[in-house]
Image (tube, rainbow, N blue to C red; front, side, top):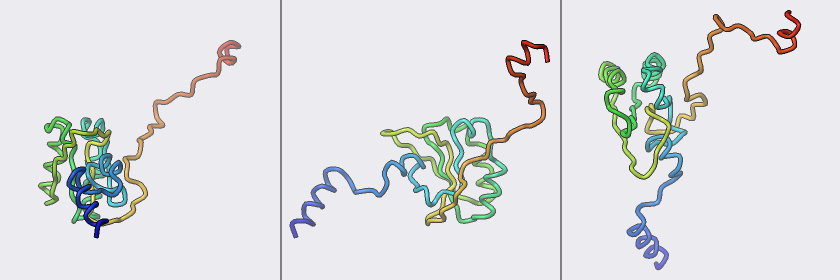
Amino acid sequence: MSKKLDDYIQEGIYGQKEINPDERRAFLGSLRERVILVLKQSEVRGSKGLEELEKAIKLYPDAKILMNGDMNFRFFKPYRELANRLKVTYTSVTDRESTTDYGLVLTMDYAIDKEEIFLKEEKKAEGITKEKSWWKKLLGL
């Protein structure tokens, strides 16, 4: 009986116990196992990932979008329009105690354990020239 009373007092003082609090802070209140797609703040500012987000929403129509409340709301306009068009709920999440690099998280209410949740880096092969090594420059090759 005293164990339950002690837990009750501790919960009253420090708040309810959370599972994986660091993970929840990073993913805007969600857990990694529930995440479908994550866009970093810089990607949100550049309106990147709209196509990937639309594809993910079509695969998971019950998903919801979590937006970083510490960012300016105008950056989310294309994402909100997409969410409204596809009838997906979105929420702005603000945590005054911590910060995260993530700007937008597409998540489910249950675990899906998706392996690739970040945007893939686009590498442009065209226009990239291989630089000569210093000894080839020296010899004029």
